Image (tube, rainbow, N blue to C red; front, top):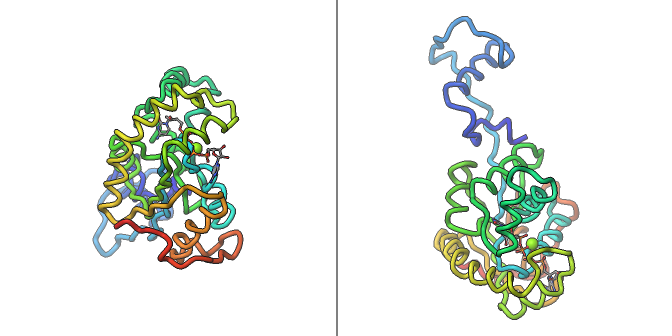
Length: 259
Ligand SMILES: Nc1ncnc2c1ncn2[C@@H]1O[C@H](COP(=O)(O)OP(=O)(O)O)[C@@H](O)[C@H]1O
Ligand SMILES: Nc1ccn([C@H]2C[C@H](O)[C@@H](COP(=O)(O)OP(=O)(O)O)O2)c(=O)n1
Ligand SMILES: [Mg+2]
C-alpha cells in the first residue's frame, strides 16, 4: 500500500521515519520504545527502494469522454481509476461536513477548494494496493496541480488531454442521462468558461514539460481508444499484470505527444 511508502508520505516526518527504520533494524515494532537514539553510520539501513507509483492525469472539458475512456484503459491495462468528480459526489451523497459546500459549487459549475479534493485523492491512493492510477478530472486548475504536488509529493508520468469541440461536449453532457445536477445547459456554459480559463493553463504546463498527450476526442469510443492504446503500450510497467494482452493497432505517429 502507498501508506507504507515513507518517501511519498508527507505525514511521516524524516525524524519519525528514521526512528521507524532504526526500530525495524533492531527488530522492534513501530510504537515499541528504543533505548538509544545514537546510530552509527555503518549501522544505518537503507529503506527498501519501492518504485514510485505510475500516475496518469486525465484532462479534458466536461463531456469530452474522460470517464468513458478511463473505463477502457482500466479494462486493458488494469490501472485504478480515481475520478475526482466521483469522489466529490460521494461526499455529497454521504452528507459529510463538506457535502453541502461541494454540492453548491458543483451545481454552479465551480471548482471545489483544492485541499478538499486532494485529501480525497490522497485517502484513495494511500489505501490502495495498486501501483498505477488514472486520476480523472484532475488537476482542473493550477491551484489543484500545486496542491497535489505539495500534499502528495508526486508528479504524473502521463497526462492525457481529450480534445473535443465545445458543441460536441454540450451535446454529450445534455444526453448523459446519469441524473447529474450539473448536466444542464446553464451549468454547462459556466463549466466551459471555467475550463477555458483555468484548465487550459494546466494543459499548457504539462505540454511544456513534455508529458502531454493530446487525443482527438471526436469519433466512436473505440476509435478514440485506438489512439490511447499506443500511449500506454509504450510503458513497460503497464504491460506487466495488465488484464489482457494489449495490442497496438496504430503507430505512434497517430498520437500527438505535444511536447
Ligand atoms: N466518443 C464518444 N462519442 C459519443 N458519445 C460519447 C463518446 N464518449 C463518451 N460519450 C458519451 O458522452 C457522455 C459524456 O462522457 P463522459 O465519459 O462522462 O465524459 P467526461 O467524463 O469527460 O465528462 C456520456 O453519456 C458518454 O456515454
Ligand atoms: N478536480 C476537480 C474535479 C471535479 N470538481 C467538481 C467540479 C466539476 O464541475 C464537478 C464534476 O467533475 P467531473 O470530473 O465528474 O465532471 P465531468 O466528468 O468532466 O463532466 O466536480 C472539482 O471541483 N475539482
Ligand atoms: Mg467524467
